[in-house]
Length: 224
Length: 295
Image (cartoon, rainbow over all chains, first blue to last red; front, side):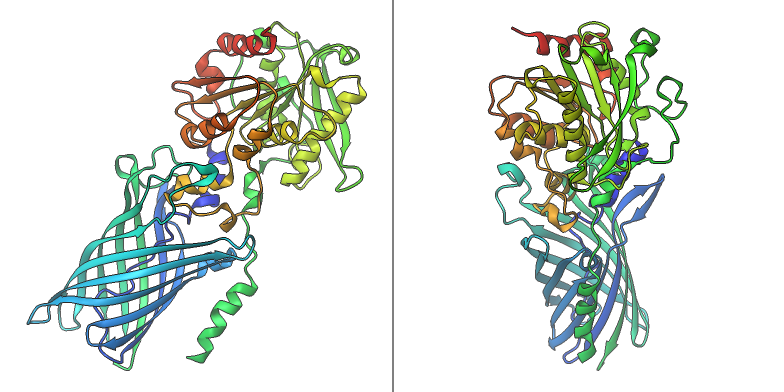
């Protein structure tokens, strides 16, 4: 089955929601701008070893106001396949402790996908809620939370009923901050309600459900 | 910052990656067909009781799509070629791996349906597989199977004595050429582990209703094409198939069939390639024979 399974691996490897590392952990300061690049995706077993699917994306974020950040991302791997995939998100500070060391960020977002081969478009709303903890002289961030993509379609291919209304995840990550640069490492447990043990892709799937995603990001701030 | 706008434009300009070719895991490196002497990996092993006499094994070649993308393809016929004008023939469309030698035990099994050499069996390597000239394409695959029908017709076969059997990727040409016949109209359709469409692959893996066109330009759509098939339909699928899921692929194809007669064989414990073995070869052959020979 080894060779035959490569079809599935390459065919579908980046289909699992095309997720990326969290765009906005803690909202930027007002006027602050940030350019970021991300790498990683759902974990798959490739030649016996777990690896992240090599999804890439670039994004731009702008602190519109205190506690309010707008971000926009473009998924470059998808673009290489002729699919425009972008996301627009608004990171909102829902809570921040008086010490400013702890906070909660809620991020509604919308994901657009469109291919120029058959003009197929898809839209997936997204909602994230993260709590973060700031520590150290450089204000590094530890964070964790939940999120989900929302499936708007009621029917799948061949008029089959769509039973997956959401594609949720649990996320844990760390952002290492330098003066201008930040480095992010993140894990997600994606689609844990979704059976993947018979999936054509060999996902890293605890208990045959969902997949563990690995993500890495780098960003640079401007106007801080 | 204005330069940022060039990033998506550059990406779009080089956006040509398609995963179509990964449908075909062909091995064109062999110099000849080994058949019984082949020492490489085969999908299933069968015992000597299913061997076919050398005198009834005929390696043939033919031109496929001579007025279009003409390629020389290779095939093997099991049976007496001189009797094709009166025999019933099973046309076997193999899966997406390697070449005919990989599927040779399966081809021999089919030559034992009913009894040894009760039916003639023709199996071909699609373009790009084995000795058949490449590259592999979806349309080329249809043309190659149709070329085999043309050869059979030339040998005297008529529509009512043609049965087409498609395994895995082979379910695509089998379904296509039954639903939308070209040279011949198969009288029966048999599908083992058929896939519904690339869209279902994507949905299975993603959990979302992403279109197949995001990844491939393939237009294989057995799930819808089967609606056009009126001929009797035999479906067999391993319940534990972890490549082409029975629930999302097989059941969809079977459920959408609206023709004259159908039967389903859901094989507990069967994975993608081993269903005949798990079912038991005698039981597998009996099921096929009963379907073909039913009143």
